[in-house]
Amino acid sequence: MHDETVNRTTNGTGLVKDKTLEEIKGLDAGSWFNAKYPDYAKDEYVGLEVPTLEEVFETFGRGADYYIETKSPDVYPGMEKKLLELLDEYKLTGVNGRSSHVIIQSFSQESLLKIHELNPTIPLVQLKSYRTKATITDEEIETMKEYAIGVGPNFKQIDQAYVEKVRANGLQIHPYTINEKEEMRKALDWGVTGIFTNFPDRYNVVLKEYNSGKQ
Figure (cartoon, rainbow, N blue to C red):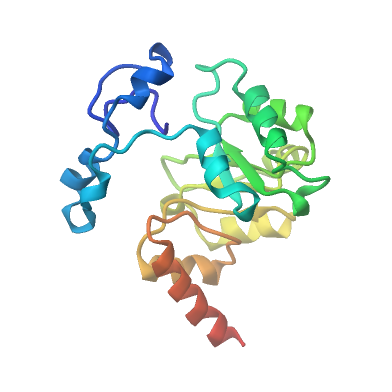
């Protein structure tokens, strides 16, 4: 669940932490999408269940890679340990970052530090949210490098200088959320190493055009 409540993405109300799995499974998690995004609506979305993370792993296995965010870890004590146990059970972690099938991100530095302590081989990304023009200090970067392989800032507040500083210090940068082709091209020109988007097919087209122009 992205939110702490089920209100936005299901037909129910209330806090996730106050509900049993059975109660959550009984909610309709698809009809709201059809109503909000009629251009993308499909009949099969009506009545969709909320999947557990284990069900996602069972469906896609090691044939997929996973970018997982620990949401509100202060609200859900022990979530990091449970997550890593599940990743180990499905053999999605490797002996180093390159062999891992998962990247974990969080706005919570504390959560990422817990994960790093439990398994230092998992690649971690520190999410950042800026309300005004983004800046990042040398001290922040050095601290992040102790546990993370990258930073994930909100794209609207960063600029080329921010990206170049992060990259110059050996960190990856995966800004969110970039949906328009023009902004995707701008991000690539700046040197980002990945993006978050609601339109991966659109990004794949832009990336292909971009790489063709670079060759």
